[in-house]
Image (tube, rainbow, N blue to C red; front, side, top):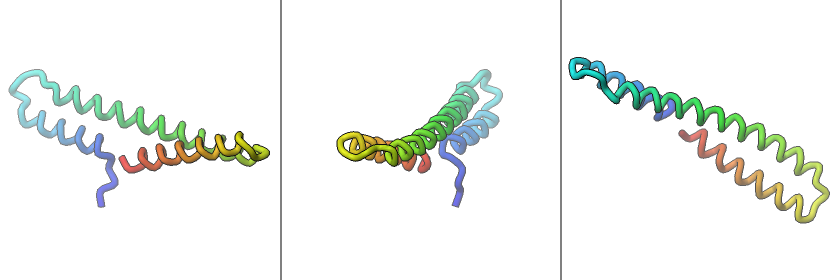
Length: 90
């Protein structure tokens, strides 16, 4: 199974297509490929930030003394974990 992120695969494909049409002058293929790579890097940075936030929320949950605060933190952990799972599927 190919583990390459879809954005990077598409960027590589765009560059390949552009090479086949190099005689047509400047192309948006290269620009699109560069933008896909940039977005992939931004997504990776956000995913790392979410993982840090998850660890901090878990620490906060352990420090919470129950009640509404703990319920709020548990909800936040759930949301962050869902976002991490979604990001790792990309």
